[in-house]
Length: 452
Image 1: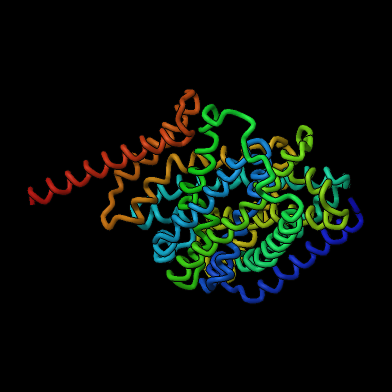
Image 2 (image 1 turned 45 degrees about the vertical axis):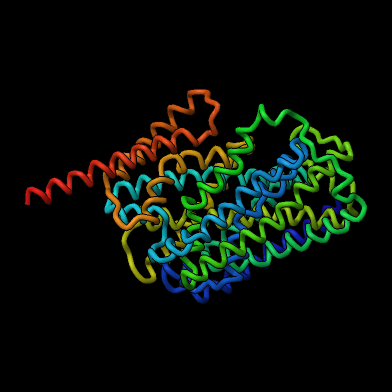
């Protein structure tokens, strides 16, 4: 690959992102501006930035890899993401916007009147996002070094630009960069897909998996179910719903994002199946998509593909960085106002980015980081947040029992080998605990009214 061309485009992308961050910073005066883009995000920008949070390295590289081994079942994760956006569009995105809050964890204080549960929820959500963010940084370093660019300063300089534009412009900068990043990714891979499809029609490929699906069904159920459950818990998605100009825009945008991911999700699956059908050998640690692109494209197109893959990783990472910062500043930060609050938000983002960059040197295995990171917050928080959004009357006891039961059940079932999807049993127990807590507190209130 033409390393000089890639390096020039790579650094050009970094500089453009920083300039966008500086531009966005001119319109930021409060923490609400910084973390919620002043709650003025319109339909198309919101849909594109929502899609960008999911069209990352996992959806592109991971889905292609899964399709290389599993054929048509490689669609599992993309379907999960699409259904998660559809789920949000069925009233949940609108409901989240109506709360006028900054973090998902605030729901536990607003709805259940518990500051303790808010902090526990925030810690669980932040821990999940930390794992995913560090995985993105590690993936970037591996990716750059895998291109033969083994100069450490390139990796450090680029991440310095990513951190700085997020520090400067907050969510507004993230959304603006997401728009041009996801547009570039979709257009490039769509063009390559159409051109390749002429030579290798879908009907000529072998879409059958290389194994017995019955023996590995849990993997595919997890890939579909976990994104649906996590969408209502994760801060980076919720943050965008909170930033929507209106409840209607939040609803429409999540549905558009589902359509975008549905269209795009088939492309890496096609390329993964094509790599298998052409009997392309993928070495240990290599990517089926990257190896295929080296075979079927020109050196310059390969430079663009490589840049697009890196951009996909970054489009996920900057939103995670902003989301982590919002949780820490809002749920644990010092109560300050005005310029001091904005400075605190920027300092928190800078510290988070620096720590993530530092910790990335202590991790190497990035496989299944996403799934491993999201299981605990799903097990502990999903039921309480779900019922908090759909029920008019909720009780604090129910939330306490549900959250702690989910945490304990998650720990237990991590030690027990079952034939159920990973988070399924803890969620069922968390649901049972919630219903018991709701029934018990409702009964106590009824008895108290009788006494009075």
